[in-house]
Image (cartoon, rainbow, N blue to C red; front, side):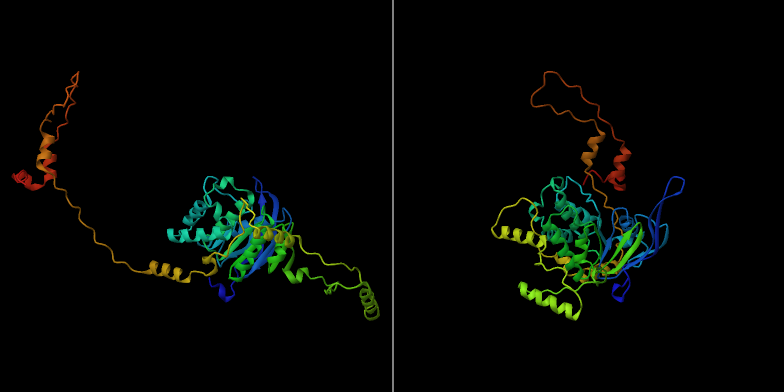
Length: 392
């Protein structure tokens, strides 16, 4: 599939999922006849309260659930196509990680599942741990991690295969404000570098900050859809932002508004900064003072393999698959040469070697198994039958 030609990463038409009971009677309509599409290189938001159908929609995109009716294509294929899954990165709502492995072993394990060679795995693991701020705890057991640190590792796991399409279900769940800000910055950077991202979250501020387009689900149906600008624009008010005004100036502005527009100033207040911005400034100040912390650190730059897709690497892999290799002619097994004296010793009764110190009780000699002469002759070859084996 060539995404550069405008093909859609995900296309859903009349998508419906009905859960049934044992007798195949309709039990719950989780997704009810929805239409949407996700375009290449965009960050798409999937919003809605609990039970609105978000997770069911994601599971159908991943091929974990089959639609009851409708059409769904992912990267130009049906979702149950196994080859499509290698091009997708997925972070579930809960991070399911092996608690006795450390972060390096965890990422290396998932890299093996995608068939990455050892050198590629080693390079990507180091870059991803640096990116999500877990390099200093790379050898700690995952079972000792907080939920926020586990989410950071889960995000790195979702990126280990350098996916074309990244699906994130509540990626900032359990993260502190530092991690939340870092994830949002990372998503924006990945979007600028050509990744297509599906983001499902209850935190509306996170979606508002990063998504290009979004749909809002309720009761399994789409209630609103569009770009962030079109959905969030307030068409009933006008915002004028300027430096702090004196009360007399505000009165003059009020008079002008009454004369020209017949409108009044509804409120005059000093703008407030976001709590997130205040929090980040406090943290940066503490970092500048080199205050020690045992938690996750602020992540580094985007991993190199995510920033620059390895086109040459994929080309070499393609050439290696198509290269014709001449078959290797089978080599006849080499028949070992046995010493005639050693083999004769197996046929004749074994000689008893006297011990250096005679034991108090003479041990009972074990019976020596006699070897058939024909077996020996077979090991020595045909020339042994002619009497040529013992002289070599």
